Image (cartoon, rainbow, N blue to C red; front, side):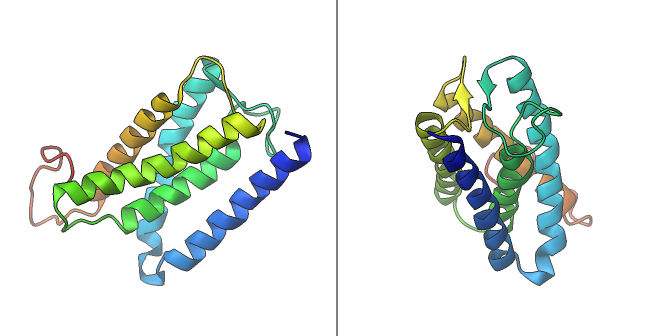
Length: 169
């Protein structure tokens, strides 16, 4: 793939993600989305830098901060945290565990699918010593810890129940 197409894909990711946030984050839940967004940025910053510094993944063509950081600013600091915000806002809290499992699976699969496409057809990401299933597992795990944090941050203070026992709650 040429560099122009990579830039087009990256700019499109910014535009589409921005539209998703504007359209699907209700005004009365902006603060809630913001907390999820910022928490996910912390998580992806740690995991993203670790993976890049260990040379497991590289990002040959990047639009932003090419000399300051080896990770993908677009994915690690905007797209993925934005999708996590939407994940937490629309999490099926009152559904059964099968629905919750499917919800995790769909969100993680969509992102992993786009990553596999980017690895195969662009120079936006390159797997050095990495496989797609590691992306799937780490994204699933980061969604899970994001969900735990979200539940902890917004838990009812009068109901002092533990949040780590039920995997899907």
